[in-house]
Amino acid sequence: MHPRWAYPAGMLLTSLFTPSSPVRPGALAASLWQGEAPPGLSIQRWHYLGEPREKMLLIWTVADESERAWLEARMSPYGDLQTWVTADSTPGMAAAMARDFDAFGQFLRALDYSEEEIAAAFDVRQRGAAASSIEEAAAAAAEWAAAQSAQA
Image (tube, rainbow, N blue to C red; front, top):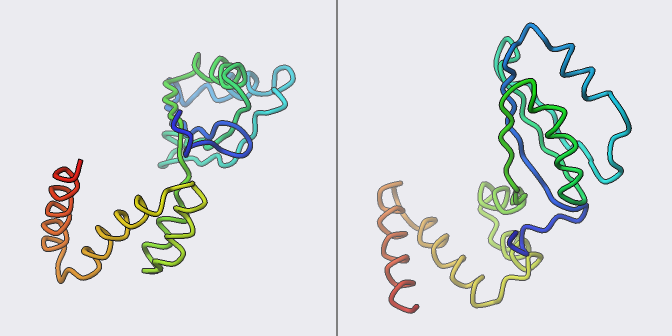
């Protein structure tokens, strides 16, 4: 796991669960309630997607792989569980929507980015902010990427 993806409570995970049989929700529920949950397993969000509840989106943290395995063992028999290690970059996206370079810089510094990395991140975003269209922004980003490659 990339060190910048570390999460204070352990490993942040995002899972998409597709039940194999929507008419058997009781078996999944019973399995989830069986036994003691590991102490480091924490559910951040549980969302039902679609109508009727076609899929579930789960955002959760674990202290270690054994806790991850505990929940996966309870859910996997009842459908397809896809899980990814996740980086919460919400502050970075919020800064982008607010066009707030100061907040974006604070976000990157909190992740221990170097000032050189921050300058490069600002450069491509400033080029996009100055563009008059999505196409112009994409062209500016391609120009930026070529300049970055030339420096490497």
